Image (cartoon, rainbow, N blue to C red; front, side, top):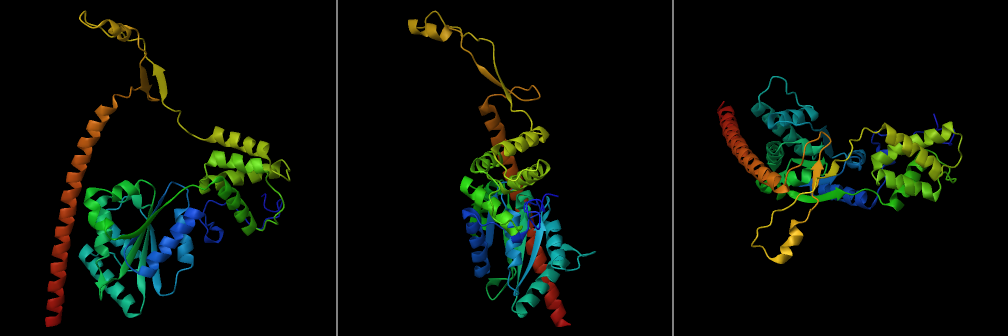
Length: 364
């Protein structure tokens, strides 16, 4: 709608990740360098994390757009997959028929596919997006898939992209074997004020902008403060700002125009109110008759603050929640440990069954 008004030939701030609009900030360059380094090593895991909207998927798409012909890449966006579901999805992404097959059969077919690629001088790459959704035992299954090797080199390499929640998952005590296979990791930070201006102008240029002044310097600062440098938020806001400018027939968008759009967006946001902090009634501490004279200050009314949630519940002492969290962590660790042991046991059985199958096949 506003493209022709501002001399653009396409939408510069669409939400769908587009490699053609990839902007390499300092941290995005580093992340891309790690991905490319990982590809050159042809082994190990690369982990890229970042907050929502910081451009992880855009980086992945940019990598896939420039990938060499000797690499066959597949990309999955993960819900909470079980280990078996992950194996099926990975195989299906590499166009392996999984209908009606057991996990052992799928693993056998996947291994055969990977060996066939290797015989052609090619290899497989798996990009796992939203990896923070994977349970620990499923991430462990990813590590097991990396055990497909030939001449000491893995036949399948994986990159994990996820939100910040992925970091504590990988730091869990049971993930030591996985951590040892991570060859590089990077966390994407939001853009700085200078990068926000460069980001906006970069995308405008790729959409046909002629370079004439479109925003005032203060406008960029207001955009940065509201979006906090998160690319997806910038895209959403900028699309609205350009639409506003078109409707108001503005040739230059200043801070007043930006603030008008920001106020509109704020009204439309469904953001819960911050927890209300109320001051409790005065509480007096009883002092024994044997207390020293200076304890009289302690007997005076002391205001105490209570933290009240939006639903009216009082937040208890932090130590109470620490104790509960400690018990929960111990219980989860025990459960995960048992599941991983079970997965390893099943993996050994599958390998034994596969060796038996190969031996019987050779006897025939």
